[in-house]
Length: 436
Image (cartoon, rainbow, N blue to C red; front, side, top):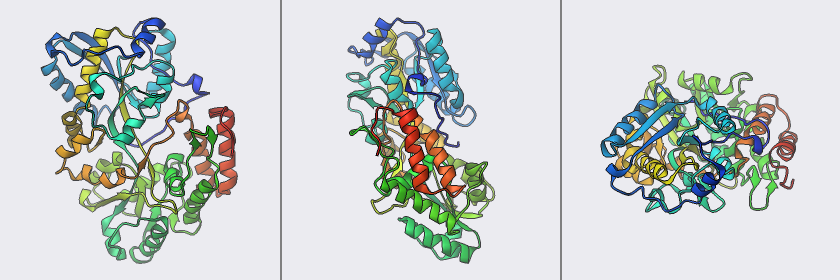
């Protein structure tokens, strides 16, 4: 599945939110304060009809989640889960429509990580503090950080992901390279060897903002400083990082990204063995491994993203389970029990075995020691870095995508392009933040 980071239209106030299946503002406020949950009670005593919007791929991923619902109902026979598959790229608009109409939104949602702070800031998510969901939890701290807003926790990780260096082992062997590069300088050197000895391009860099973050993080940069409430996307550190990426293209070390479909071209070339390295995530492992031209999973190498002068860093991504705030306590208890079951170590390990997705529950990894596709990403996850988890977080990537296209495809000066990005952040995203 291709990672897409949809740009949200308008300001944060216009961002898309969850809405009640009925329920007044006073009910939302009361539920959001997280009264003591009884979700750990006898499973047979819980009775509720719950709607779950699953935004995963309906063909390749949904069957695994439907199988888990059957397992849940074997333990909780009186909790009915009304499963609805909602296309990821349509889900936010459906939420907005439901919020405006006051009906039709789900009790439980599979939310992209950037959505959670937005929805929480508007009061539409149930705070989970003090519930069984967070008792003795072993969720990975970085993915869990996306669920936290103003001191409360509003979701738990379903799956996590990050970016890593993916490489073709046969091409590496042909070029005489015996280990993955750990810095961008090493990437450039290895890419030259690949072109000289293997006759293919060394690396393809996708011209999208999300894929530029490892270059920015590698120099100690970020998009904003949330503590100082300052826009830092055009910092000297970020200019240096983006300059590194652009120099790879200008020097011929990296293939020039396609202007119309940078991501699709990257994947086509990599699977065909026409490029030695890419930066991408675990959502593509099954796709790459299944391609008859690639050579199977055994030919795929995975390593942490290379680093710059400040070290290595890649953005954390993934999806979380969240619960709508506007419901009575008995229904909330059932929803909490369902999410607790779905996010357990056993359930997330089941999904990982079926789909190759990375669990957000750290205990799942003890159950997946023999799963090579999951184990391959362990080191990459160790350098995953939280994005700025603020309500406007989903709005950062539209301007950042424009910057990436200008720099990587059109050859614009990185400083100029990043200054333009900072101006867009100031006018359209975080107007109350100070500029560099």
